[in-house]
Image (cartoon, rainbow, N blue to C red; front, side):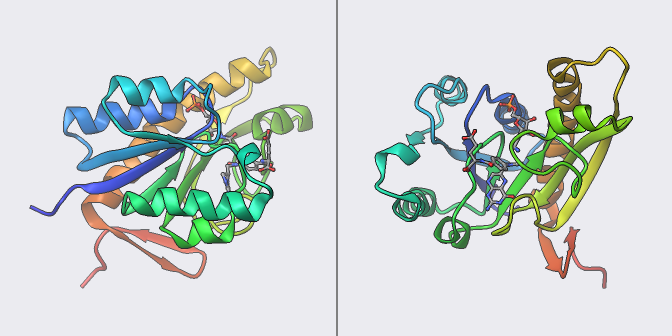
Amino acid sequence: MSAPLRLVVLVSGSGTLLQALLDATAAGTLPAQVVAVGTDRADCTGLARADAAGVPTFVEPLADHPDRDAWDAALAARVAGYEPDLVVTAGFMKILGPRTLDACTFLNTHPALLPAFPGAHGVRDALAYGVRVTGSTAHLVDAGVDTGPIIEQRTVTITDDDTEDTLHERIKVVEREMLVDVVTRMAHGGWRVDGRRVVVGPARA
Ligand SMILES: Nc1nc2c(c(=O)[nH]1)N[C@@H](CN(C=O)c1ccc(C(=O)N[C@@H](CCC(=O)O)C(=O)O)cc1)CN2
Ligand SMILES: NCC(=O)N[C@@H]1O[C@H](COP(=O)([O-])[O-])[C@@H](O)[C@H]1O
């Protein structure tokens, strides 16, 4: 029986993706431990979810530092201090710098079907463009913005009466399921990156 996967989860908002991971680890269906929850925003409700689960938290606002490099160095030290096997950015709304990315492997979920509609407003942009199908993407994080190798994607059909909020809530339903499924598979079988492909699970003999 291998040790549970050590997860650090970074959030900026309501934290329902975080809650899905906390629930799965508490239920024993995800062989992982959320060892810390970090944020750039002291007012985010994701912190309250971590507190309720007894998970240590840290707050590292960009505004507390003279520039982005200093914030990157401080965040990298915070993350590395928990010795994670994997860091999940779950609604974390800041672009991570090179030092932080060097600290661990990062997994992000984005509320659109990358490479379409990257960035901070994927749901709004898909709706505005008029696509009929969008969804969520789980990908490893690289120095670009939502350009890392894709692990899995799930689709959501846009309806004629959708607003950004109604669409985002439906995306989050499939996103939470996908995130727990992907991290569970990674916890059981590990992963390797082959160019732009991420292979989850043990290499075939
Ligand atoms: N180096 C990377 N860092 C992060 C990535 C990534 O792919 N590479 N993904 C994001 C999450 N994300 C999309 O899924 C995302 C979040 C925020 C932004 C963005 O433009 N942020 C602005 C500030 C926006 C704001 O404060 O409202 C910024 O950081 O200047 C783009 C993509 C997690 N980090
Ligand atoms: N570009 C990053 C981005 O838009 N991330 C999105 O923020 C939401 C967080 O939900 P939550 O706070 O309820 O977990 C999720 O839909 C996630 O994909």
